Length: 373
Ligand code: GLY
Image (cartoon, rainbow, N blue to C red; front, side, top):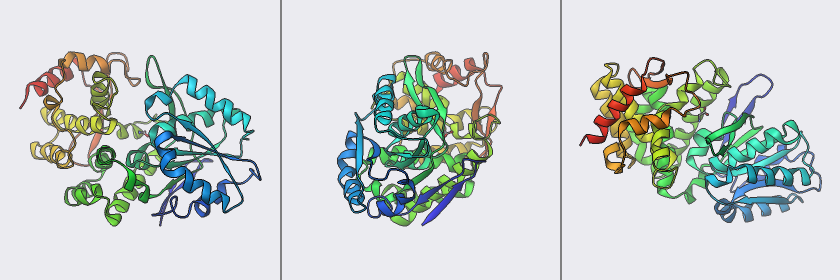
């Protein structure tokens, strides 16, 4: 078992990574967070797919403790991160009489974690919650660090709060049920940690990425733990993304977000796939600026390509030009006047925040990429 602390003044918590900790030993793993409920039902939030896989197991584990769960089940997909679902969820939590010292369980991927975390941030000005991430992406990224949000007409994640969970329970065994495409999408965020700050881990992924993707237990556990250690360190240094350190976690996300916007935030390009291609573009743009060696940029593209993730923008078949993609970036919440802080690379494991990137130059670069190959 690995227990990775996220050290934050007054809000520290542990991320527990253990095969079977949810699917086989849920009551034991979660017992410290049942306090206060007595014979009242413990609230669980899940999406319909996750509930189908896990609800029976969780219910059985709780009944062995003479406890019971009450479930709030949302439709799968980003649609659940909305004002209307938030309203229903907070009403439901208030109806259950959840108090500030009690814990709500978020069982699912990023959507369920973000929605539940935000509902808990605003219910009675903040009640506890425990993240139980069931996708690789949520396990290595969104469940840790306390970013919670819903989407609005103006864009994704624009209404939200920093609200840290009280614990994150990661069971790599739950990934057995994850479709390969989602596994690959989550793997993009694993590659991100190597590329942004850990050249040795990146080298390990070059050798062992296939084992992670095929869910070999030892390789998978190593990839998850290394990713979370990196994230915990960054979050502890810059919880609210004010010093530029946490911004490193956005490597590939600015390009990626523009690609997601252009493809309508749809299944055509999953978030992780957009981030994967976004990181390749960040590497190639860094190379174009003379800041990254050509062979290092090629390594970044290869690791993504080898994982079956998109590494060529031209292959997406988009019907747009670079200016249109750059225009999507103008609505980014990190936009500062006319410039957008951009995560670029000085090598493998050497990401940095560039503040001199003109969106016109990005548009020109994207035109070159759209025409390439
Ligand atoms: N997913 C980026 C962050 O947590 O800061």
